[in-house]
Image (cartoon, rainbow, N blue to C red; front, side, top):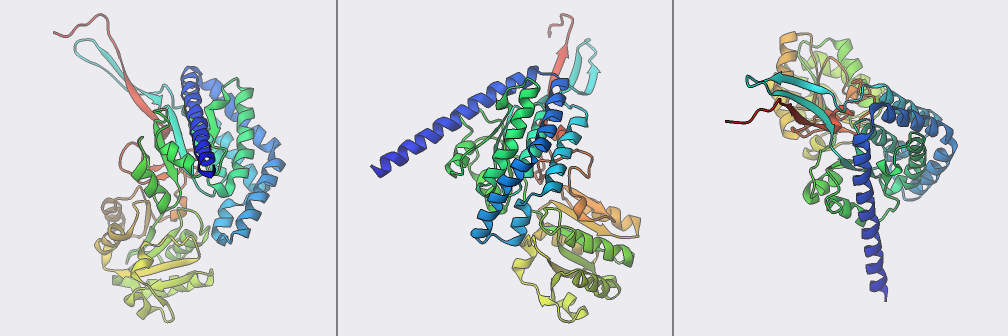
Length: 429
């Protein structure tokens, strides 16, 4: 009897998810016919509803945080999960920012005329139905809803079970915004169950309804999605980010950037996890930068050359170079010039975000050319790896793939394109 009831539950979930896929497909078609004004109206109404529902959202989040603490969740993960009035207001303001950016749908990115008179235009168009699977951060629900809507896509959102109550409360506000603009509520759907089988069904493509899957979370989530997905995946790997101090680095800049890159918020994917220091001037650079990091509360784990310059530094293991700490810990290596830094990043990095501090412009540009990461910064903190800081309004995540979209994924990156060819009766000889 027990196994029969489990089979029934599985069939019921499969039916529910199939219904979500079909509803999303229909909503995506409605969105293709809606104009930019309707999408903007919906986004503004969503922001207003998030503000109006702030207390309900905070109450739901408090339940999630209490349950997470009871399971012994790490403090850095609790910080990702927790909302307060400031974060709810930031969520609403983020949706308003997306409402204010230019609508990408229908924009001609290029147009030309062939000798035979054919007029060819490349035009941005929605992808269709996007499934987003994410962990911990409930603000992703609002960001993902807003960006998908701005780009004319329907979305199926599956957040982590640890923030289910928060996500459902935020989605209730999103649904009010859609209704206020006369758009189908199925434009943005949230999976209402914590059952992990729902993820497997999404990865199966929901009977062909899903056009793109975006995972946003840890290594194991992304690996599972990439291994099992039956629809295209836009990968978002962990942030194994580096700051390289070149021999020409200004010491004041080096200290400020290293401390900010690591310690501004240790739980974000743009946080630095490794400090690389040029052996040509490590004696000048490393001890004072290490002292600044320690004064900020950061633990340092170094290779032999780093430890020889900074007494009391812990020994880094091979595992440290590939660990996204999301905590006040940084690994430190002394490397031989730009080539040494680039080789270390190529071996251990995740192609997410890497920075160089250098006063020598040629050295900085060589680093930017050699390091094949989605974001390369010159004399700036890795914490700028953020769609909002790029002027995209918000982001789904930082794409580390090399196709379609790379770096912060905003509304424009959630479109594809088609060619519209206008003729006057031409036939091909």
